[in-house]
Amino acid sequence: MFFDIPSFCSLPRFLIIGMPGWGELLLVFALILLFFGPKRLPRVAESIGKAIQKFKKASSDIHNEIESSDDEISEDDQKQG
Image (cartoon, rainbow, N blue to C red; front, side, top):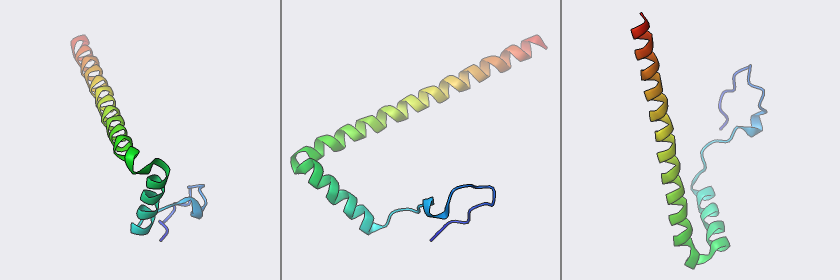
């Protein structure tokens, strides 16, 4: 149940949590359904999906910017000799 914790890790063993099982997922879904209700649930899921999509786009933009600046730096180093 627990992962092997390296000796240099200072986290207590009870803070290491594995992947949730079907029971936990059903419980979370039931709580979300009770909290938002069946009418608002599709809108909530859509907004979560859009937020994830925006986050992925922003992270890929940042990754591309870092890669392009790295390429520019290496080109400048090659020009200088």
